[in-house]
Amino acid sequence: MNEGVYYKLAKVLDTMPNGFPSTDTGVEIKILKKIFTPEEAELFCDLKMHFESAEEIAARTGRPVEAIRLIHKTPEEIQHPPKDVAAWNEERARQRGVDYSEYK
Image (spheres, rainbow, N blue to C red):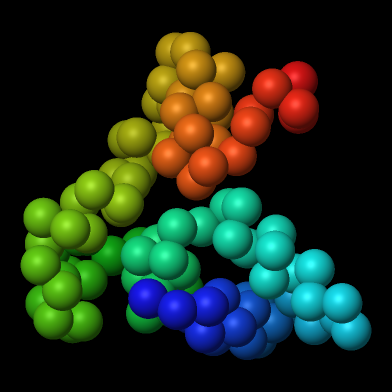
């Protein structure tokens, strides 16, 4: 996937009530790259504004349900975050190539 997915995501986010305006410097794209993997960004662009199960998303978008389950959180997972949030954050940062220690 190329950088275009992040511009697509920025446009989707800008349609939401809080907005996500573009800047002259493009810093918003750098922020999105730190938060989303390309796969997450692509999937986010296809989500609805209401909860859908991984199976519903897969059926609607044609993506494999197994791939969606790797990214998708159920309501229970959202209500019960990991016990070690710091370790979870570090792992997410490591997956994105971010040195999390600079944010501690």
